[in-house]
Image (cartoon, rainbow, N blue to C red; front, side):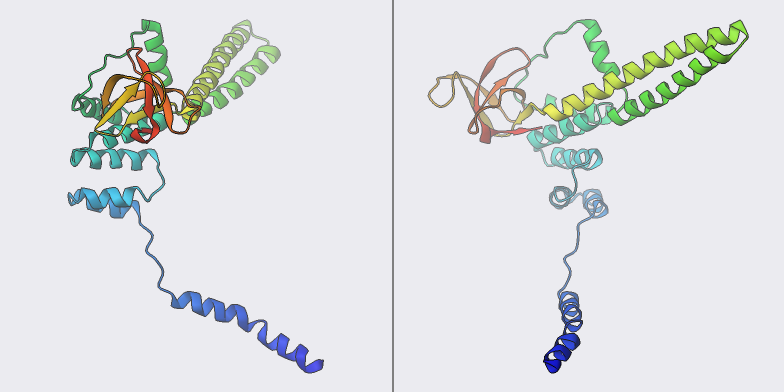
Length: 255
């Protein structure tokens, strides 16, 4: 019994050491980096850049560079897809918005955008002015300043100082509410993810799933909104001009 215990004591620490030596002896796989992808892009090796970018975390910067690389090789569907993903994460990115317009101009389908009231357009522009995180920070700072100004209002003696505290508190309370609303709006848009892009060169839009008749045809790069996501094989889509139909889910990719 004593000898068995000694053997166990001597061999127990050796097992992890042996395992460590075995792991160190196996050549480690190189982890791709954004710098490598950027270098490939700068060298006009867009296929290699795309291969590396797609292995990285899909941040706004990575999606933007990936969209540019697809644009360079003439793959407008993927370029549009990734420009849209940039704008989903960073609605105020003017470069991505401009590049998206250029890419859209090179697609076959020219579908007019849905008309909206001028104040709705202004609201959307204001929501896109800052990122969701920036709006959240603004809201946090505003509520802190509002509370500070309320303290000035309640505990100050001079009338002018009390007025400044009162109206300043109202102003920053309004900024808090707006910042919170705009941050929520962006987070809501990001969580819905009901936008999609047609990836196939041609996609037949049917009047109903599977057995329906063809209503019209869409082409690569056209953006649609998924209005019915209850089926796996088929998605009901809505165009910006109001037309609707069903498309095979394999022919589109969600933004």
